[in-house]
Length: 327
Image (cartoon, rainbow, N blue to C red; front, side, top):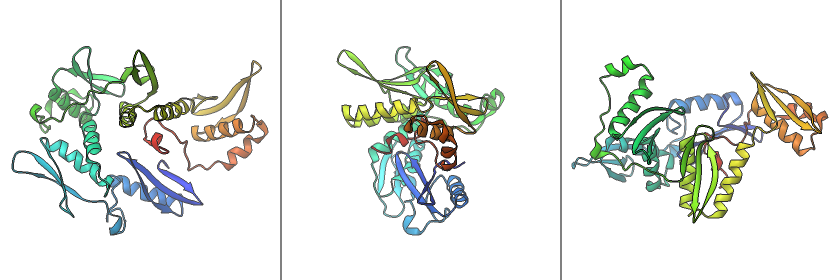
């Protein structure tokens, strides 16, 4: 419920990362006020404008898509008239239009175009060995095809109607992709998939393979790959990502879950010691970290529970870009 809300100096701050941009949405006196504003922002896709209650000077830029008279599309800033493009696909231009406001006056169009391409081809990968495209959703391969346009349409139908074959077959309104107007498909190297470890990121350096880490989503693995590629795989950046990834993997160390309850436990001289039960994972992680800092003093468990700030969730997640927060 309180994701994207953190407590700072007795107040509640809304922050959200959108397309790699960390955005502060204001500070509120109570968690209820912050939650109410967050729900309003979600309704309007996290855009600062009149509808979400922000002053005009804070409003995000507004964009529109226009045909340029040559069968291509441009994205235009409604205020200053600056344009981006042209693009063959109106759908792709529409994604550019959706991303641009979050960059406000600091537009990096190359990065935005790359992000738009990733979103355009979301859930679709290419199997280089077998020579076909795969539509994968929630760790399941839904469809494969050598035709990218066919697979894009199947993806759209599936995401709209789920596995309901009857609805999919009777669908009349569907975006038809034109192969000549598709943006270049990204064929990233360095990312492989494994059912157990999910998306693995590696870098081949001469005759050895350097393992960076494994991630729950393809999007996050791709984002990290792009970040390292941008920095020429500099070992300082590589080691930073490896350390953060290791921290993520170890975030539940000494914590076990039984039904809806979390327990902290560890073995001491071949004897299992318990350090309490917890109703949510964030509290369990907080108490665990405090115990580690204080040499596992069991007598202080109650104190740590009481001092926990319930609105601050654990720092790192697989499905957010917070991994780059301190970069």
